[in-house]
Image 1 (tube, rainbow, N blue to C red):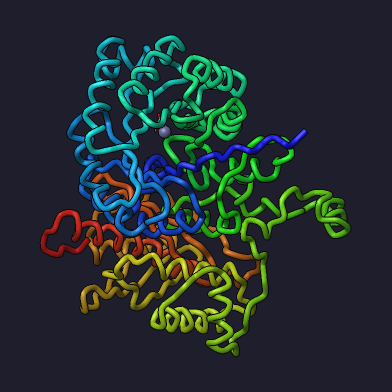
Image 2: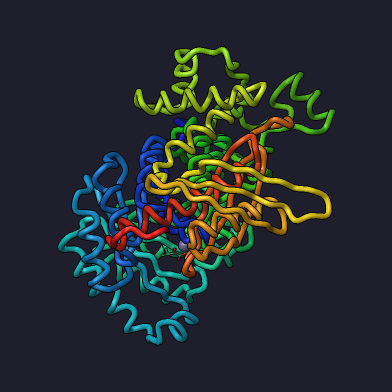
Length: 518
Ligand code: KIV
Ligand code: ZN
């Protein structure tokens, strides 16, 4: 008997929309574009760029992505409102391939308390708005929000109404991460039975949240039941506990190809790089034990395991780390290494720099190589990721001196340059980092409040680069900054200034007002 043909599963990436809804993960339009270009290299099928009606920044981000990213379908999110649909039309004008994603809650609890609408009203709203959108969009996805808690009979009515009105994709969200695999696959089978075009001429998508840690399992159960599109995010970031993690879904389909009847077109070798870029730009650290992309995902601590892996890697490793683009802690070049060797390594790591960017990266590398005995690939990646973040350096560290003595409060002297001027402040604090931040605030006067501070080392060893993530709340909005240096106080200051520079970039572009300190 001929082997059964495998089904292609579309990967719909919502890192830039649902992922960015993670508390504190806000991205500038330029950062979103950077991630979208990397998602294109990863070969995702659809990129949900944002929610254009929600802010001028979101509108600009989706417009920039629609213009620059040519291969994947670019999608915009919209409520069932003509104004939102118009905003998506404007945002996606320049897209080569575009999709509108409209959503409307269908569950009893959302109907009664959030929407205050009856079933009939909801069905009419969906039909009218999908028909209205059809004049501008051929490709329309409909999401009955909170589908997994909707009465199946009514959910089916909503799905049927949307298909009849012209929807080309139906997405079944487990909005609050409530379902379990068996129940979710039963729901998917029920919908396919009632609407045989699902998973065939009309895409059948799923969108699972991770509140019970089941997002990937629920998505895969739905795929096995007939869904042919999965909505997911890099590193599983997203509302509350996050969304289904792209790398977990894709690597399960690939690793268990003996069991799964499907495949994806994802370029697996780009996974690690994409994960690091998203973590760097959102300021959301990947937990060390995170499947596939966590720093411990391929390290073996127990002697028995190490022995097994040395004898035969597959004894304790189900994925070859090289497959996801993990090069390992490769020893790089020393301080005597030349520009040519450095440039070759940079290219191998997947970064393509202009001449000027390479000059800057090479001089940063030389500074680092002077301080650090061994420079690993991870160090180079940290340097380059900092450089490619493209946030204009309005605030720059000019000088830092910190003194700390038993029994006395630490003191920091900070000099910052801002628009050609250098300003200095000296402050005391509860600790050396606090003293640095107080000195910065004396100069910058932003009213920022530190809501999170975290530090980890990029590689092992006492001379490792310290990688600091700080989250600030300014005028009620959270912004994340990241900084690396072999000196952890300098890394802390760089992270703080990075966050301030992000706010400055947004302020100048969004508000189009005259310059202000932040
Ligand atoms: O979780 C959800 O229901 C959503 C919809 C907008 C698809 O994000
Ligand atoms: Zn969601």
